[in-house]
Length: 290
Image (cartoon, rainbow, N blue to C red; front, side, top):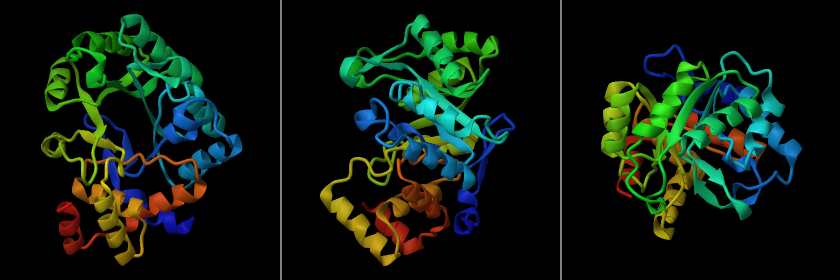
């Protein structure tokens, strides 16, 4: 355990306008559920052990949602970690629900958003959610998502004391701008990695504003050639491809927070060690060229 704690988990970040400071290496619960993020895990005890290992190693930022499973991820978080450490920040998200057979469906009505907040509260065993991300829908779900009406619903729940802070997920720069006109946004959670870099300008803007950027799918969307190049770099550094991808994100910008997910204790330890992997300038240049 000592080798992980000495990495300081990538340093810390304080969410804008709050007193919440977290280590930059966090943990995402999506992979704790069954296959296709549906149903219970094959090894429940193993899933609980992963959560406990992450927190024991110093992780104080957990990303989750009640639509993982559904309900499964949050139930595991509560079983493994409740009563929660005082410094643990649990971030959840709303805007989707699960249909028959594990399908993903939009859930943006006032009733659905309200129910989602209450479901997260209930299964996590909380009276207030520290951060709720409103997840914008995928493009194929319909018209351009304006966010105003949905954020107003969440702001009403915030006024009732059920939500402390708000974030947004899966958004464009324009949608983020819309959200900030309505309320303070403390984090943006989007797909971003070495080869999917459409958010470069947004990350730089958020860094200037002191807003957290939380990328998901750190190894998603790589071509075989790109994966091969990453493997070569990892071999040179005596590291894994995931560790290199995570280390690159940590070095990309100080406002980036990571939430790599896994259902393996060994992989939790492996991922957290990425915080101590310093990428030389020539390696960063090679990776940037991907």
